[in-house]
Amino acid sequence: MSKVWFITGASRGFGEAFARAALERGDRVAGTARRVEDLEGLRAFGDAFLPLHLDVTDRAADIAAVQQAHAHFGALDVVVNNAGYGHFGFFEEITEEEARAQMETNLFGAMWVTQAAVPIMRAQGRGHIVQISSIGGVGAFPSLGIYHASKWALEGMSEALAQEVAGQGIKVTLVEPGSYGTDWSGSSATRSTPNPLYDGFRQAMAQRAGQMTYGDAKQAAQALLKVVDSENPPLRILFGAQAFDIAQGVYASRVQTWKAWEDVSRNA
Image (cartoon, rainbow, N blue to C red):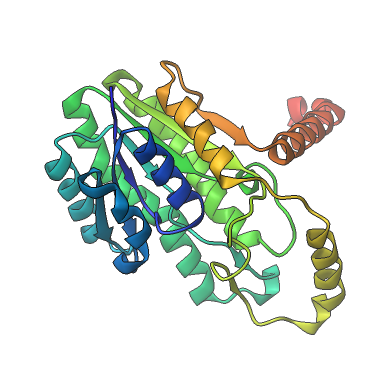
């Protein structure tokens, strides 16, 4: 059976790739963007695509958009909270305004859309909420502290949600991608005013970034189709070999540290 999707941030990057993959196989998609004209490329799919203007930081608008998509298509099978961006800044550089803006989009935007979708899915007796997290929701890297904070918060919130709605026919999956060939670190990103103290660190990181390989968003989209078609989808799934390898190292290091300090922990 075809599915009805609601995808935030559908104008480019992962969002556009997810929407296109769903539409190409015959599903119907409500896609949102801050500038609805940026969704023009998906209008070729005709009535199967519903373009919606949405700033996910507006809770009332989130609720209205989800309800509009449901009313338009008559169902709501998959919600993908993809809208988000990366903020680059070393801890000392991040302003209050930058920190709040990052949380408003990456965490609260996903929260408001999810809160709007859950009652609809519960009434249907089915639904799948997909939260686009990051390998940055598993481990942390310099100059991305506030981005990590938003994704780690999304992970904890979504893990609790998955337990709360498991008996209501609603599934929850956290997708944790590595680096892909989108503009996430380019025009989509924001940056704090640099502190010269970190210039050397910043330069070394830029050199490492230039040596990285990037995944294909189209392949990620095909992987997502497999996840949402599964009868027993995972709570968490890593997208990309890079993410898989990083996560293995992160957890191995944590287990090693916990074991090394086990006596202290048990006696605390």
